[in-house]
Image (cartoon, rainbow, N blue to C red):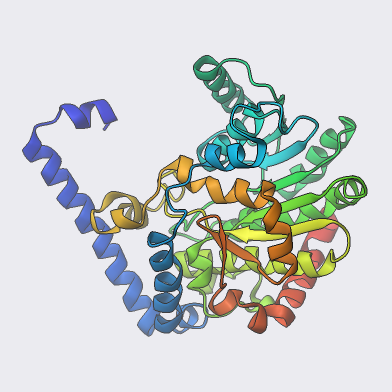
Length: 383
């Protein structure tokens, strides 16, 4: 049903639809809790303690956070100065998934203030239409957009993307690993036979980062470089990550537990990168943008109804403009470099936060090293 038809529906119909949506969501949540309590392969990755402490520890603090109402554009204004639309001139960013949602908002704000943004997208046509839509609303941007194709679920597309980027002979100041998928209800293989979430959320961005590292190290000789990886509260809900279980086999798949693993891996990857890059003028960190209805998880009706459709979860939800803020805060704000070098690795509400459970640096340094080694082993044939 379109938004127009929903708004035109009688009040009783809208109320009935809302109640139905709430019911679908809570039914899914009840089944999820039962799985967490009783299914061994789920409990190994996400148990009741890790779920409660992770969700309350992140989303609870997020709701009460001082910068919850800050928008993405306000972050850039603070760094560049309001109206200084050439403040990021000469800077170059790659944003994966730039044609919609958080990635589109990141690209918009960066280009508005003069940054050259390379849109790393699956559909060139969709990206071109999105760019035309932005320009129709806001006029010509001070920063350039270059649209290049990448299919993050397919590792064979990563190296051609990197080769196309390198052919532009540009520096790379900001790598924003934004794109991802959430909790397909069934185990789905990637083109290379890996579990789809792991391939899309983790292995592709791992390979992309490795292949772009020489260009980032070259850029870092003259300007600071930032790598920002989008994680999630789901990663904080994850109890443990087993490197020997990467990627998840079909028989042990549970959509939300495995999503939590991929998001914990995002944070562990950022932590490993920061240790690896110490002293190289490159800063890496992970962010939780918030609970935002961008179409993420659209193949899982129960989960999307619970997160995005019901009234109870509405206190945790953010707009796209606010959800995109922490990503650009971590990419642009001067104070972030010192915070990360001081040990911070996980940010939300435009501030460093304690990563919990499987994402905790104290518990995860060895695990992060082993996960890095495992992903390098899997990605090596595509380098």
